[in-house]
Length: 139
Image (cartoon, rainbow, N blue to C red; front, top):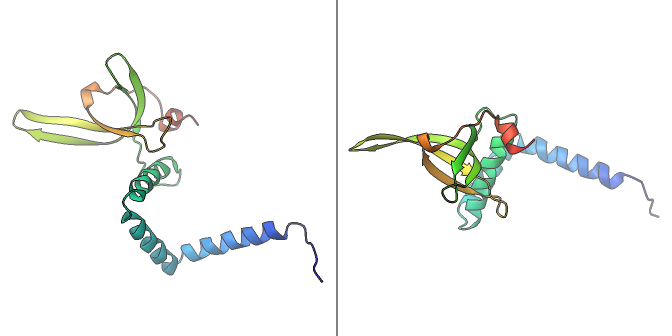
């Protein structure tokens, strides 16, 4: 004897997702997650996609303490006279004999690959429009 209960699959799925969340928030679940992340970072091609997607998701997640995208930037790319929108992720000082040079790390998303391109550009060459990161993403 079998009975058809409307919505039982949906309720079971929600319960399963909830229990997975409870398990992953525990110490044991965090250890399992760290082990899985370590394994993924050892895989040759997958680690690049994983690192890029993790950085992007941490940048647009509203509950993160530090955002990967600091501000919106416009850079000269791919050639002189053409520009592309990007996001400043960090800045670094390049030390040389002629003096220090301040560089910005700019992430430029591409339309066919979600991993995008990352450029190190002189801070003087970066145009900083008065846009928030949310406006730059297009939300």
